Image (tube, rainbow, N blue to C red; front, top):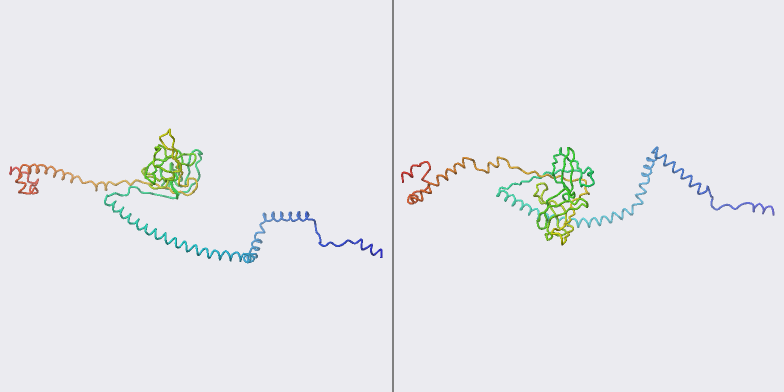
Length: 347
């Protein structure tokens, strides 16, 4: 019995959980295996098709797992979309009614304008040409505000053309090349633009500040009728910029007791450094033809006939003054220049 108990004591109790390799060994093995698989996949690209087939197999499971959330989102979107569409429909109906009334007024004004121009024989003197351009790169000089666009002389771009975007004027074409053009921004200190205050029609000239992408309105008196928030538009008196384009907004007005002028700072309305596509607008002055001038002027034979009539009319008036009885008894039209001896016979 003593030997039997001794053998039982020598046996070890079995472990409850079977333990394999150590955690450090497993970490090293799986890390090496992962690196080997990634290197092989990057070289041979053999796991791409396997991933595609695996995604095809797992896609139904993903749809089933996402079905509750998709159902909730679809229901919520249905009711919210229905409510939003009703509101948009009502708003669009209102806008359509307002725009229809405005369109009727515009047609009436257009007809009146056309009628007045026909009565005054005044034709439209300016014609605009525009084309779309794209900014290639910014000028290389860091001390100037210039950009290069992909439209040049082969695209009928001329120097002086205005460059605008959806919000307002951003610059002017100052140099043209065959396939590109150089545009100077309105914030450059070498560029000026004639402007007009939209609120009161006051005209002035805006100068680019150069450093902080702003504009200045110099040489205006301290008591000038300009307020912060006033919008500046092109006046069109220079024949370069079309009239009515947005230029800038007044942000700050500074006055000092020792200066009679005010310092007016404006921020450009257009995206000076934001957009890539711009519009190049040029204006050409329509020159009247010689035929239209000749139709407005009377011909030479008419001038001579008028002169002859005036020379004949003078002695007739003199004769009517000297012989009142003759002019009262006979009309003046009876005395014609073709019978010059008749007054002598009467005398």
